[in-house]
Length: 456
Image (cartoon, rainbow, N blue to C red; front, side, top):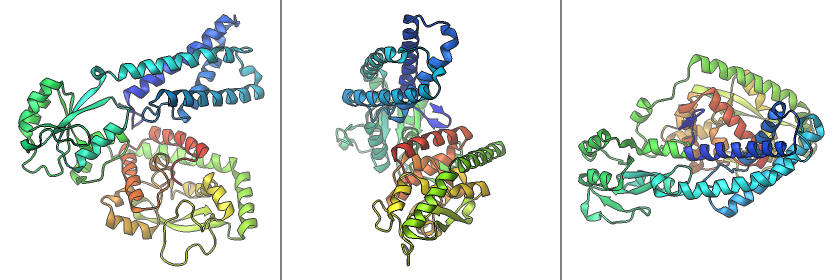
């Protein structure tokens, strides 16, 4: 399902909702057992504890079911999150003692919800691992696209999918292994396979469909209640990005999304100005200290100005705190890389903490950039990448951003392959752009900054 224009698996939402109830219930139970007076008036304090705990769980990737799949990983991340929540709550109670529900209530509830969450998650994993609760998928096609999407499904655990097998025109290939599941039949076998394996969804992954698409078989499957969809659509839902390999323009043209209303643009601009002005005011002392540190370390200039490509291909001058030597680039532009020798001592610090990005708030206020959007790239690289990557120019349909979907989902990019991967995320963002989606990206950006993940 989609939540705030992001595809979220029902499994993730289920474990999130279950643990919300367990944490809230454990704290409320501890308060009742300690005869806390006027418990009804303290519900909001219990909600605060629940919120802090779930934020710590979320920021510790506890709801990434692909990452947290073993019992050991489950225990380690749960203890780390609870430890962080204890520190945050202790700090809150020290600053504002009135937020406390009662002495020792959180500590009393701690053991209860630790055991409850572990038991709930282990039981959920066992139950959801049952084949009866998994959606059975049949692939039509055995080419690169079908294999890529199948591997993605096999590698993730968020969506409860099980691949039954592949369909190929060549009957002699039946039984041949394709990324683990095998070829189980030809188009003529689709109806039989649906009945035998109770197929829920058919994914069409044919690169060349001219004369090869089993139209009648797929139509009968559709009429029988089986979901039939393009592999690109499946990939988008499972990964949160768009598969640009062999992507047809018709898919972009007829696909839902890629439309931003005037109201959305107005609200987005309002949020841009609000967030940028607030952040600029709050970080002004930090920016002053950063400027002084750069000047003491490597002299002036403190700021680095560079031409970038913005909305509709319009260029603008982007400002950043200088993190490289003054003579870092003298010839043809090159991508910055991790461990780049051109980065100064202070440069390493401000890059890791994202302090070098703060002057871009001025670009957001001016309207050159948005707070959320694809990262702005240099004209030289845009020209080169446009030649090498299909649909690269389409990322300029919206304003570039200080942060973005690709930045919070992918590492620092310094190659053609990285640029292609980030484009997949950028196109997904442009397709699903909304104010709520932007706010969730800002929320995830906090995790990126705190734990030094994502792209620079």
